[in-house]
Length: 179
Image 1 (cartoon, rainbow, N blue to C red):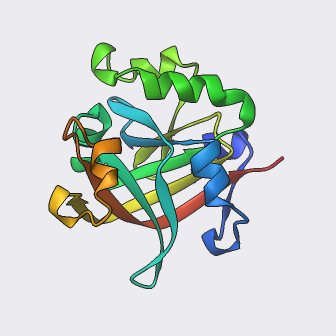
Image 2: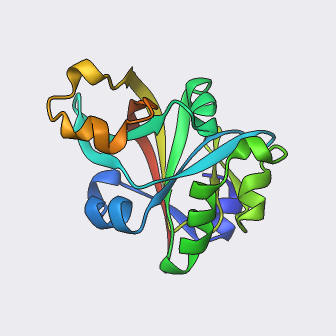
């Protein structure tokens, strides 16, 4: 954790001690998935994902479509962040989910959404977050039509064949803002 994080009121916390409801935190309130560094990063809103234990480690699984600009940043990095925000930031998260970073200068999408980049353990998150999870990739695999058992999912979510890559990542650090 760096000095700027301390100034903002973040403290390192044991990820296993977090009291987080993933159904609400990810599914209802949404999260930002961010990769890159302070000179070039990109973020996207996610409302699909998992928190739990994988291979004996606290882990997150995030699903990123092939078409998303953030995917190339995640693919080219060892680490990414998953960050959670207060309810009054929902408009900013909606903006990040509805706009592509390809249409902005480097880091411009987050700035346009009113977010302030924050360097965290060699990757990027945002000062406005309440909780930041630093994640180290352990697995990446593309979902495929042949492996989907519930075929109704294909028509409902993959009519355009823009498949997700599932990234399973170890949560190496958690930083929570003191309230």
